[in-house]
Image 1: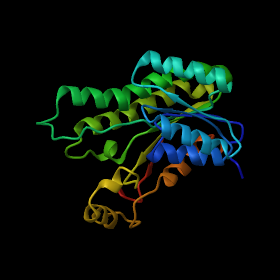
Image 2: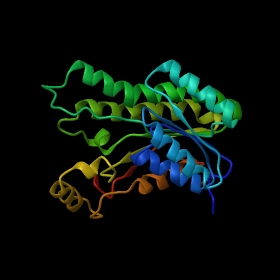
Image 3: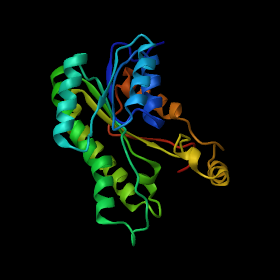
Length: 248
């Protein structure tokens, strides 16, 4: 059963990891997918080809959502190409980890711009068309770190915690227009990035999780399908932790 038939989703940062997993699962569920990437043109072309093989429309856009005007331009281009934006997934994010004593102002600002200001930029860019069509689902990607903090990640934790308050406010403002805004907080998800960690570290992580495994991008994508589809028509302002019970 295709839960997202004829919907258009805009997904930021989709050429690898969680974003790529979401794009693939959405296409399988019948969604047309517009996605952004920052530099990997080859990976974007590959993904575009793969998504189209599921019989949906797909297009990659090289765009930096941390820049306000670029987000506006992106939304306008996607609307022109696809006709609607039914789902926005703010997934793009970076880390610049260090102890607070050593974090530079630049490292703090960059993480806040890419992880948090981009959420403001793109949400602002899509709400007008969503209000016009009187429907929309905005899904913002936070993190388990945004819920509990993490030593050496004060900049990342601040950016991901900020997403929670922002999303609740958007849910309150736009609920009357039938626009929903929710958050997903992934835990330890095994991607290309975690593959670079020492095996012992990964084993330690897995054993500390109640479900005794790391998550997959597909685990996160399935939660996104729920929030993007009519199955969650009465769900807004919520945070769903996809973390194998890590924060239980």
